[in-house]
Length: 347
Image (cartoon, rainbow, N blue to C red; front, side, top):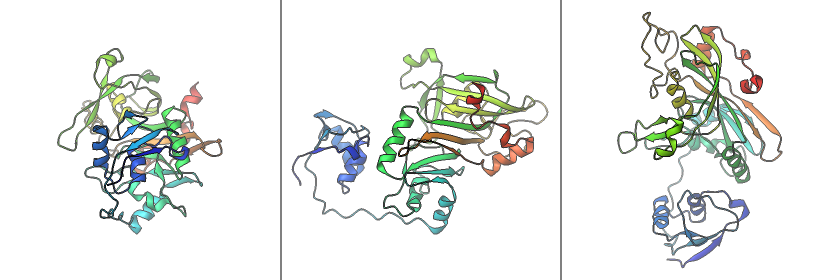
């Protein structure tokens, strides 16, 4: 066992989660043990109790309790990314420089692993080093069935800058969706709060977000404020509409839950009602009589951000997935009908 140590957080390590920093310093210590030491108050920052998720600041003092020697069995080597997966993830790259990589994430591919997910973007990121020593770091997430722009940072400094920009809402994200019905007014905002409803099973399967009226947010335990802008761009009679959305906040399932709450769930969204609208007497339900795909029609179309190194504004646009492109073709819509930033065009 080692003795108590007091370690100072360096500038390069600022804004990291405590648990990730700790694993970097002591790779033989498990995540579970780190969490236990935090709960017992054995790990402290500037003398105070902390959680594993606490973000560190440069100059802070971390108390490290006595730890077992590092002679424990070495960690299991990470599984090598298969040639097929490496080819897949590399084909998704739509922007790349020495600091940032942007992917057009395919629908159906998880961003990170879960209790039943072993194949995901984070795991495949080993194939995105392109000559650098470290694998790129995720700086935000997309739902498994949502496609589109996903940013990864190639350096710790870039990760810190991009994460901070997203936390302070200094990036623009525009999503495209096909929704049931036609939202009115055509241009609007949704400010319902969101609270997590527990799912079934030990892994939380079926977990979803419940909308909370703005006046009830403060009185609802666990509810968080959420804000979405939307613009109805084109419609199919009164059946469906092409909608652009900008999430002002970044809550779990925010766009899906918000559109469902105003009565226009995203088509193909089984969790939030986008696969089960009743037909209107002519056989046309959520899939408009079966003429379009049953997959989720939600796509992260564009992201605009300040480059962490050059400070220049970068705009990345992702082509739609095949199932959405086919739906657009069915309705006679083309991507050039919409402005790159519809909200900017409508200001």
